[in-house]
Amino acid sequence: MAKKTSRPGRTLTIFFVCVGALFGLAALGGTAKPQLGLDLSGGTRITLQATNDKVDQQKLKEAASIIEKRVNGSGVVEAEVTTQGNKNIVVEFPGSNRKNLEDAVKRTAQLRFRLVAHQGGQPVIASGVPVTATPSASPGASPTAKATPSATPSKKAGPNATASPTSTPKPRPAPAFGRGAVTPTPTPTPTPTPTASPSAAPTAIPSPTVTTTSKGAPVDDPLKWSVNPGDEWLQKFATFTCDKDGIPTTPMTDDPAQPLVACDDEGQKYLLSAAVIEGTELKSAGAAPPQQNSATWAVELALKGGDPTKTFANVSRELLDNGGRFAIVLDGQVISAPGFTGVIPDGKAQITGDFNENTASSLANSLKFGALPIKFDPQPTVEEVGATLAGDQLRAGILAGLIGLIIVMIYCLIYYRGLGIVVVASLIVAGLVTYGAVLVLAKAAGFALTLPGIAGLIVAVGITADSFIVYFERIRDEMRTGKSMRVACESGWIRARNTCLAADSVSLLAAVVLYIFAIGAVRGFAFALGVSTIIDVIVFFFFTKPAVTLLARRPYFNNGGKWSGLSQESLGIDEPTPVRQPVAGGVA
Image (cartoon, rainbow, N blue to C red; front, side, top):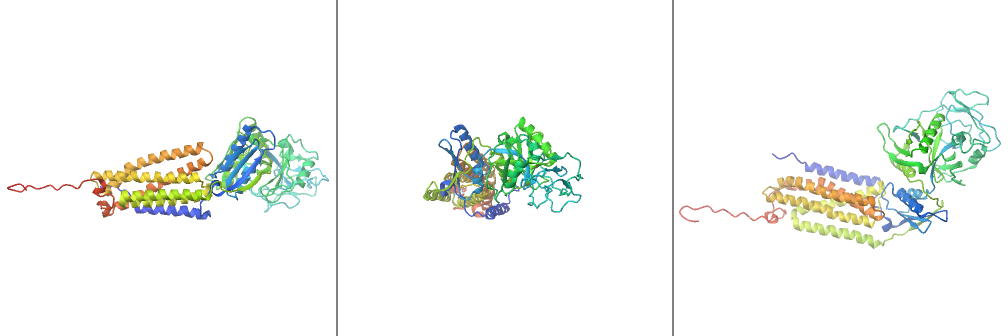
C-alpha cells in the first residue's frame, strides 16, 4: 500500500504564494532593484579627526572598532571603517542619503547619564511636591510662587504635564525605566494650577517642600541640584535655543562634572545635572520584542556591578519618589529621557515607551556602542565618493554568473534529458527567490550587494545543482533495481534528502563561521553564501521534490520513455534477452 505522501500540487501552490508574498514585501518597501555596495555604486565618506595631537593608537583602533559596530550593528551595510595616519578614522558606506548612518558615525562623544532638572521650560518634579521659588530679576527665574494640585484633572494634561503659568509645548509620550516587560499605561495626573497667594498650603499628599534658591544646590550633588539648579543655570537654560531638528544655536561643552543644557532630536531643550553614570559603565543593551501584554518594543540594559549599580539604585529610588527623569545623553544630545516605574536595585532595567522595532534597536545600538575612548572634532568631513570598481566589473560578474548558470542548465538537459526540465525550472525559481530575498534584505537589514556578494551567489549555483544531482542519481539507482519511477522517487528521496541536508549544513556552517570572524567585504561573501544555501534547501524541498513527484505520475516518465532520462538506455540496463521455448521433437 502506497504511503500517504505527498500532495505535490498543494505544496507547489503554497510555495508560489510564499514567493509572491516575498515580492509583495519588496514592493511595500519600495525596492525594485538591489542596493549596491560601495565598490559598485560609490557612497559617502566621513573622516573623523581626533582633537588631541597625541593619540594612543590602541584607543584609535578601539574607537574604529566601536564605530564599525555602530554602522554595521543592525544590518549588513558593508561599511568600511579604517584608521588613517595617527589621529583619523575614515568611514565609508554605500549610498548618499543614509542619514541614520551619518548620525551613528558623527556621534563621537562619550555616553553619559544625567538627571533632568527642567524640560521644555518647566521643572521636572512630581505632582504633590510643591516648589517654592525665590523671586529674581533674572529672565531664567521661575515666575511661579507655589503650585497647588487642582482637584479636577485637566483634559489637556498629559502623563508628564506640570503646572506652568504660561502655555507649554504638548508633551510627547515619555519612556520609562522599569524592571518588567509591561509598559505602564499612563493615567492622567491632577494638573497643578498656580494660586494667587504664595502662602496657600498644598492640598496634595503631604511631602517635603523643595525650596529653590538663587545660588542653587551644589553641582556635585546631582539629586539635590536637579530640583534646585539656581538662577545662574536657569538663566543659561532660558537663553538656550534649539532648532526643530534639535541643533543648538550655541552648543555647550559636554563636561561630565558640570551641568549641561542640551536638545533632543525634536528640538526640545533640557537642563541636566552633572553626569551620574558614564557610558563606559554600561555592560550591555539590546532591543526586546513585544511581550504578550504589550504591543510596543522595549530596550533592555544592564550596568556593571559595584558603584554604577548602587548609584542607579539610589537614583531610581529618589526619582521614583519625586517623579524625576533620567536623561541619556550622547554627543551632547538627549537621545532619551525616561522616568521610573520602580526601583532598580540590580542595575538591570528595561526602558518602555512608544518604541517600535527600529527605534528600540537604534536606542539600543546608541547605548551599546556609544562610548568612545577618545574625543573627535564635532564637525567631521563628509564627502561623496565614487565606486571603487569600474562599472564593467559589475557587468562582468553578472555575465559570469549567467554563463555558469546556462552551462549547468545545458549539461543537465543533455545528461538528464526530461529530468533536466526540473533542473532548469528549479534554478530559475531559486534565482527569483534569491532576487526577492536580496530586495527584502536591502530594506530590512540594509544589505548591500558587493562584488564578493555576487561571487557568493554564483558559488551557490553549484551547491544548488549538487542537490539535484544527488536526488536524480538516487532515483536512477532505485530504478536499476526494477522499481518504477513513481516508487523510486519516494524511496530515493528518503536517502537523498539526508545527504543534501548534510552537505548544505556544512556550507551554511562555513558561511556562518566566515561571517563571524571575517571583516569587510568578505562578510558580504559569507552572508550571500549563507542566504543562497538556505534558499537551496527551501527550493529543493518545496519545489524540486513536488515537481519530480508530478512527473513520476505521468506514464511517459513512469514507464521510462526514451527522452525522459530514465529509459533503460539512460540507466545503462541492457534489454532483456528473449527466452527461447523448446520445440517438441527437435531443437528449435
